Length: 339
Ligand code: PEP
Ligand code: MN
Image (cartoon, rainbow, N blue to C red; front, side, top):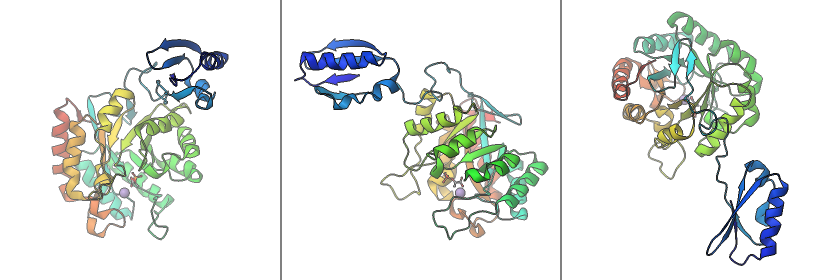
């Protein structure tokens, strides 16, 4: 929608109309009391490329249609996407997916122990990082491929499919060899070439929201993966940067129902990274279930105090079964059962 300034002359209005028509876009006009408005009906990208803001007499250009396409539920994709991971259904409104495990694979013993515990507690999938994005280059950055071998062993033993992060395109082949779900971390949400690589791996992708990314930006990032022909994308709200520093990030629970209105993709919530404090993880998980998320992803450790990474936010493994039952009860209020 192109809003002309109140002082715009007829020839300025005509010049804009001609320019829009020249891009093959249909034009409708509204002659209001104050402003003359030109509606451009058609390809929004073609209109944006015209650079109309710079033309004489133009006050502002307001995009009306959604900037994301494939992730949107408005055009062709009205039904929710349901992703099937070895029989676990994510999306569609009748299941709730509990993804649990350590922040990072530290050792075979640590990972197998926590995998057994979360499996016994009703988890649907096992999480664990092999390649870790760390704020400091001096922090532990993951065991790499040996960690993926350990995760594969844990899958073998427990039957839990594995979620692990693809940090760098150079690791794509090795991640594809071991992962059941490829995680794109918050810091890489706008690494567009990595999103395209992830889209080509033929595995479901868990796309985390960037620390300071809007929901429109999250959905446009999802478009990069979907455009590669990969339809199995789940979105993850993991907390965003706000003025509040009491929690590690601010969990944006409003994002869940908003995303449900605007996209067909499943929505997962990560209360662990948002909270940064295990005492908050259970109430925030219950809230995620109550607000209509399709699942949660939480960090769990047998001995959080000794964890190499994200210990303060990791749930005590011995509390996991009780935690899981509480969250499942809240998901059940919305007619969902654990997937
Ligand atoms: C993680 O899942 O361990 C992680 C690093 O998450 P995020 O990218 O959301 O910070
Ligand atoms: Mn972590």
